[in-house]
Image 1 (cartoon, rainbow, N blue to C red):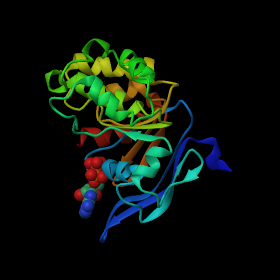
Image 2 (image 1 turned 135 degrees about the vertical axis):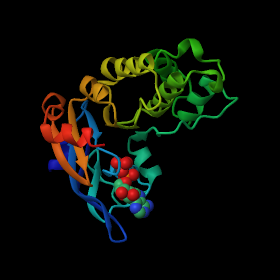
Image 3 (image 1 turned 180 degrees about the vertical axis):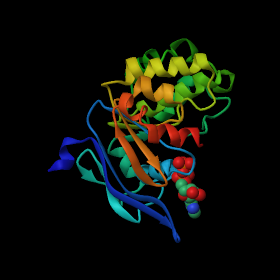
Image 4 (image 1 turned 90 degrees about the horizontal axis):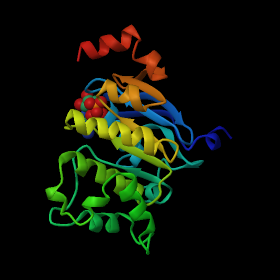
Amino acid sequence: SPEDRYVFRVEGISKSFGAFHALNDVSLEVSAGEIRAIIGPNGAGKTTFINIVSGVFGPTRGRVWLDGEDVTGRPAQHRARRGLARTFQITSLFPGMTVAEHMHLASRGMDADGTRRSALLHLTGLEALADREVNTLSHGDQRILEIAMALATDPKVLLLDEPTAGMSIAETDRMIGLIQDRLRRQVCAVIIEHDMNVVNQTADQVTVLAAGAVAASGIPGDVLRDPFVKELYLGS
Ligand code: ADP
């Protein structure tokens, strides 16, 4: 069946809040190892999309497929068990707890000897900070820790909600490097991102949402040059 070829797929997703149509017939699919960016001006429906995919609420119409399973009616915990992991726009770490303690919590008993946690701290460049309390980390290191935590359960699909929000140029470059060099081909990722430079340097495919519908889709080099897409961004 077509859904089996994709690690992640949404088909004909619509969402209404009362009479307001926040999403209208959105479809996209992501293959193993692919990084897909979703962009669009404020109000385009990006947050609504991520909430439907992660199971915060259901769509009005349409289906969500995860690794060949229809998870449309299933709660967030079920999706997490089936391999969906996400980060949030706002950091959600516990002040006073260390980086290592956060990784321990995030692995939820699935990594008794800590092998995977150590490997992830190494992969994300946080090894030297393992014993630091998270509130003493830079904003960039905190966001990178959240990605390491999301990877701790060995997910199939990683949802990143504006991973470079609030970052300095240097921190953004580090995040680009992490996604480009380390995440690529390990996991398939769906990234909500405002920064066109980040999209251009990390995404295999980009989907543009505008007023709740797919306005353009393709490789970043083509989509970001599209006059219609440029105008959407100049206007926002
Ligand atoms: P984006 O993340 O792209 O900025 P959102 O998904 O947050 O867009 O919002 C899309 C539209 O849906 C916006 O016009 C917003 O006001 C509306 N919307 C989002 N959530 C709700 C809600 N719970 N009730 C009513 N309208 C909502």
